[in-house]
Amino acid sequence: MTDESPDLPNNKAGLDKSFSKGLILLRHLATCEAPAGISDLSAALGMTKSNVHRLLQTLAAYGFVHKNTKSRYSPSLRYWEMGYEVWLHSRAGQLALNDADGLALKANCLVHITLAAEERQELTLYDRIGTPIAHPMRRLWPTGTRVPIWRIIYGWSDFVAFQIAYIAAKPEVELTSRRDEISRHLEDSGLTYEGLAERVTAARDLGYAENLGSGLENIEGTACAFRDETGAPVGVLSTIYDRDGSRDGRREDTGRLNRLYAHSISRSLGFRDPN
Image (cartoon, one colour):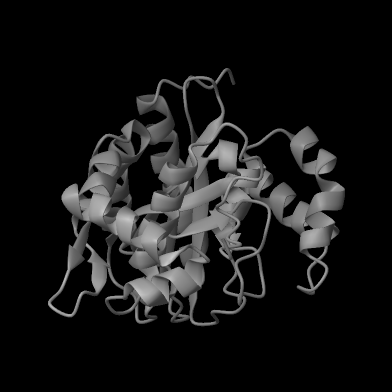
């Protein structure tokens, strides 16, 4: 197969090949802008036409794909339905929603809930709530977008606040032990490991990270991680608002509120700060 996505497991030993191909096919269909034919799918994925046809028939039988009158295929909303069930049963995400509502109302801003998948070293935008901003954030950063924890977002010239907030909530040893890995990721970005370390230290001192707007000059915001009962960070509550210059202290005021509501989520998840 020609699919070289980083989502594919490095070690495929012990995996069911047919099921794996079905998942790859379904994911590829979800990214297609229009219904795709068997020949197109075969060429794109490096599978035989007979294999693609068999997989499509199985997926259609279970309601995951539609076949139109031109024998072209597209994913059904069953894909979304399963994702919604996962969304609905996320304890951390659901508990964060109430505090996100409160923060959005109090700070008059847009609030993002980002959840961590530590085993994949990723952060995923779980939901957004609150006052829309002028910048087309939905197109830039749609719900469900995943970002590697230790890499900058492509096209942005800075670590954004939710990445800094999450890293700042982790033990210092994890940051220092990943120095070589992080430095490699930063080679073409114009950023340095030392610059990241400075931002993390500042976030720890303030109790929240600041979005300085680099790459997006018209917005700013703050972010603070929340923890589970073990003390490990499991997500980030962050704010975004249009920068209008009318209130010099807005970032500081919002940061304090951000920290307060993130700590409330942590308490709901069972975390008790020993300090």
